[in-house]
Image 1 (cartoon, rainbow, N blue to C red):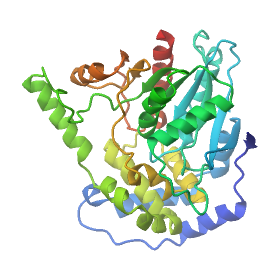
Image 2: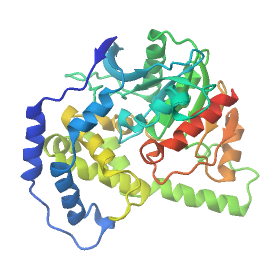
Image 3: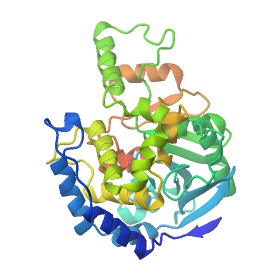
Length: 373
């Protein structure tokens, strides 16, 4: 385990500032967000990035957490590791979403590790481990890259090894989005040590398995049809990334504005942003965009799609399951048929990036679910 501290050279920040100020802007197309990120919106956001956004403040904020790197299966893994002052604390691995980073959990580490300091019951406390997924931020792929696929199962094996190296033989797991794929896979793989699998959402969405919809009435089937239409609609970025991620990577590596536009479009597509209503604060959006740019991981972060890993969380009965932002009752019924479902929460978030938009709901969900076990 090698201690790690973020220390971006000033020359890299100066280069970013220069590129932002010399952006060659696209001409506007008719229409609004339905044709992509509007030029006026992006210009205003980039002006903020180049002017008011303070990377050094964000860097210092992140460096307040103990960070390390280690090499597992040939891959450098960066992770935050904050131990609780409470002696009975449960180790907990938090897996972030895409397109995001470990920054997603910056606001939850404190309340989870030191609940007493936040006016919460210290009976439920956690030692937090928050890794950067392979190909993201400070877990870059080697050059030349490993030709073996980084499947969700391989990430789960890597997380199990990481927790073992840290000396944790009993731990919980939580994840959102991409993290919601890793978490149940980790539970199934390392069920001897994982005490509970908590995800924000994703279980109960129909997969087409035989008998999955048996016993559902017309209203419930209509709800599921609407949900499926939403999850399969949008810009079509998923199928493209599953086929040609390297092509987009060239633009991400050369233009910070191209990188930002792509990230913002994902947030917009997931959450329904309007120019006047942003569920995730722009400083957090830009912190993630800056991390992607400075580490050159905009392209490599697409590995879940190319490796066929972007989909729905697996069902597993080996470990108790919880869902914090559960959705309609019909989804709970489907999920309960195929999982040891102990808790179906009703929390809501204004964004699919829950830890960025509503960290208090993540803290509450983790404390509730693991407090039950």
